Length: 470
Image 1: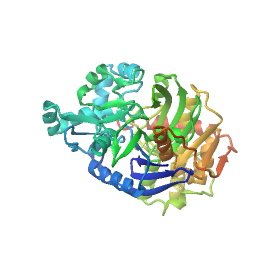
Image 2 (image 1 turned 135 degrees about the horizontal axis):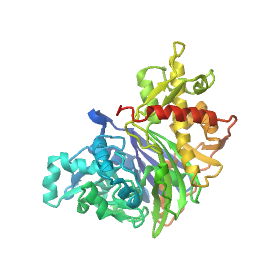
Image 3 (image 1 turned 120 degrees about the vertical axis):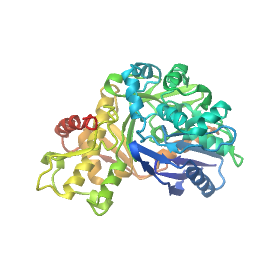
Image 4 (image 1 turned 30 degrees about the vertical axis):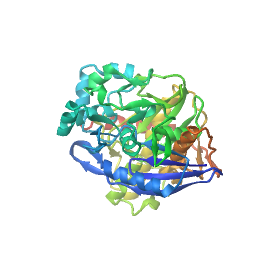
């Protein structure tokens, strides 16, 4: 038996092939272009993504099942008959709908989205993006009149093009603000609130199930990348938690069958996965800028390369009065403030480029600690938190994060946990179980009390809030 997982993320598309003997390896990966524009636009070319997915599938060779994980909230419009995209992909980072969101908030609509979808009003989620496409893509209205318009997240577009089935899974649908979290069906009230015609949306299916076939090979799982990572980390029972550091940083904690609603604390209930009739829920908390903040720092030229960020000889920057708030795209959980701005505070004539870089590394960790603290106030999170992603290869970051959290962190030699989680779900679709590939495990234990850092950071965050409004 062999399974391939297609990990279609924010910056790249990769294929993980998992063999029956437990061997797992990335067989192909390719980055795609990021198209940035005015008013917070972030777009991808959907045809480029399709080409990359096909290349990854070809590199994987013959397999028994396919799983595909997706970016979550990123979405587009396409022709239901031909599968041709009529718009770019509007990426989850995109904030062009922020003004629309503020108008909805002013009208009191947030109570409805919280009650039904479990989500606050924010440009992060798909619903307002989908309405924007209907309003600004001329062909969308023509196709709507012809009953040929499809509006949806990238997974449904990929599946229609690759298998001929236009469907999304319930974990992805839970990220749109259009799905009723309790029933896992499209909610007519929410669709009307955002102005998204319900008939244009794809069918919602279980995470593990029948999503058609590609070249005769069944696609047996479709899932959001962060939920795939949660599964790949082995999180199954309430309180199990993971953090993935990619373009953003995303923490999820399993809540089991319970939909834990804590809107006053900025926490998001979400569907982790659905296998048959069984639904597993989670709490989700995101930091918009993690890896993207590092990329931005490197582009500024403050440090020569990524290796320069791995170790610092000076005391923590925050102890020296220097702090960075990584709100380059605003603040997500638990603040939900798109008008917040990234900023360094505490600079003086003695501040060096290395000091600024150190503060950026620490700021990402401290924002993550805010998210975990909010979760831990509502879920009995275990003492250890499993972490993965690019930043977890940075020794300074890991040690600082462990101290900021006051918890043990667990890393593994095999760290392709998002793709592995997707593969493991796909294996379930053909009645098989995948065991996590064997490899070393490291535990990073805190050796300092980082609570005073978190208190000082909270003060800096309060200054970054609503900055773009003022």
